[in-house]
Amino acid sequence: MSSIIAFPHTLGQEVSKGGHHVSFEIIGKEFDSDVFKIHLFIPSGISLGDGANFGNIDLGTINAVQGMMQKDEEGNKKLATDLEATAIGTALMQKMGIGDDLSVAATSTVKAGVALNNQSTLTYEGASIRTFELSFNLVASNSKEAETIRIIEHTFRKYMYAKREGEFALKYPPLFRIKFMKGKKVNEYMPFIFDSYLTGLTASYNNNANMFHKDGAPTDLTLALSFQEQRQLTRDDLYHVPGEGGAERPPSNVQQKFDYPKSKSEA
Image 1: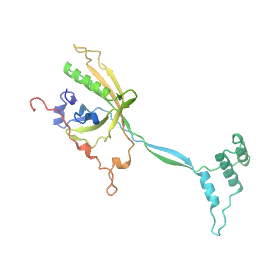
Image 2: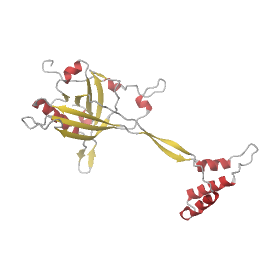
Image 3: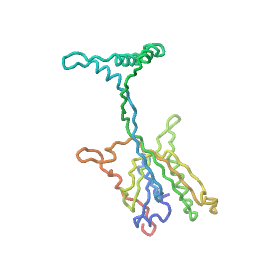
């Protein structure tokens, strides 16, 4: 079996004319000598979402204590108002857990009708690890194309799973390197995706019609694939700012050209 599979079988002709397609390269130590690649047409409705995670922290108690320790221009400690002192004292009691069910701390603030200004602020906690989905409707016009679809389905499913190492260990599944291509070059107008794990696969058979080839193969397969990038990204991963270092955009590995198996006449 060839280490490179393409569907439909006419995809090579479309590529030579500058046609659009998506390339999946399975990477990992066990593939160093025989890299497996799958090439499919680009589906419609591709979306890739970026997200940032934020938490929050209350600075009111810290800022209040620090403010009370500061001195004015004459060297005297700044004095809090009675209401400020009540709010600050209550907050400190709550932080230290003084009082049964916080009743001691809460009573004074309720009577005074005052609460501490929490001065909440957002804290950056990093970018979300990006996820994306690709769905392909693969229709076989003959039994040979049906067999190619079958190989594609089982290849994705096989390398989504981990491999058992002994009785108690699992070896990570390989990563997928995904590129959107225009002819034999990367289409830089499409999203650049970093190496990703296949996290989900849904195969739906004969969505178009409940028909089978003579050997029993379904005439069509809808393959929905979910991926998640291996790691969290930073701005330096995505964009190169002159003078600030960081990765080139696009990274050099996207310049690898499309590798399509030659036909018998070309070999």
